[in-house]
Length: 335
Image 1 (tube, rainbow, N blue to C red):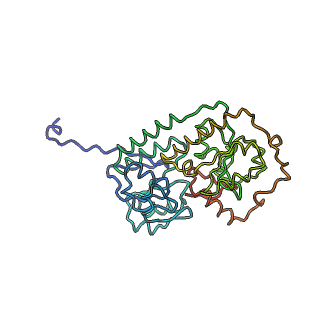
Image 2: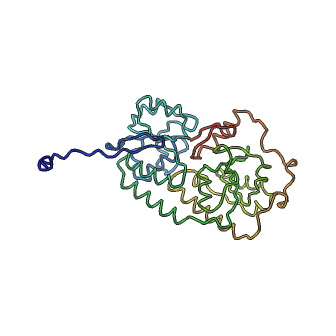
Image 3: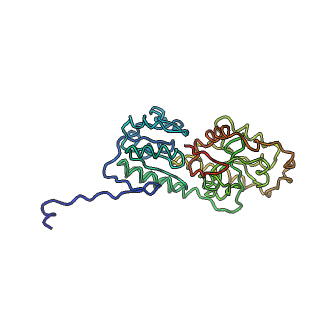
């Protein structure tokens, strides 16, 4: 009572928050110099109104346009740690499966505060907005952005009646797809459909055309780089059922864990709902007029050279958030 009367109220520290590695971060002092080591993290900073605190990002970060003016400190292949240090950041935002563990560990060993983000579900976008808001002193803006995202996400949900069986193509040579842990698969489930390669051991990996036909998808979802969608779709021209039910979307709108993901989810749900108006049943490979598996051309050599595989994965996974499980089909962590 005496302390209250004298105005000597003890300061109450703001509660700490956790990153996706479970480490605690104090938020009493907002971060003012931030380096974002992934495209989605740079974009989220602008979503919460804290873009002016960004002092650097990475190659591949291209939205919003203001990000293009920032210095680059690396890419999926690695981070220039010395350049990060020279910028004197008080917070580094890293992507758990998109940055090399060695780079994250080195930045931490040098005394930098590294917040590791690992979005795995559609709802994780809102959670990240709130935490970044608290870290940068933009709590109210982060909360407002998160609530808008959650409300719009709930409105876009579809039920699973007449669910489409979807093959997701993220690269062509070799033919590549994603598994059930990826955000794209989360989006498919949200739209009442399923990924036919959900059980793939790794986040992303190569499959043969024979394996695709054996999985008997009724819909092809093409996530091609700009200008490549028509080429990828034409490769499936002989398979009538896939040709009739093909969806091509901007990869960034389904693979970056930011509020723009809603644009991709809404477009995907709408396209899938349209494909369900066709009453035809899902045909098997033989019903679709496909050639026998043994007669189909191989999309990749049985054991491609490691360097070639790594180059392909770097291109294909550059924009794909989510955990990249170590395994035969996916040995690269890309950001």
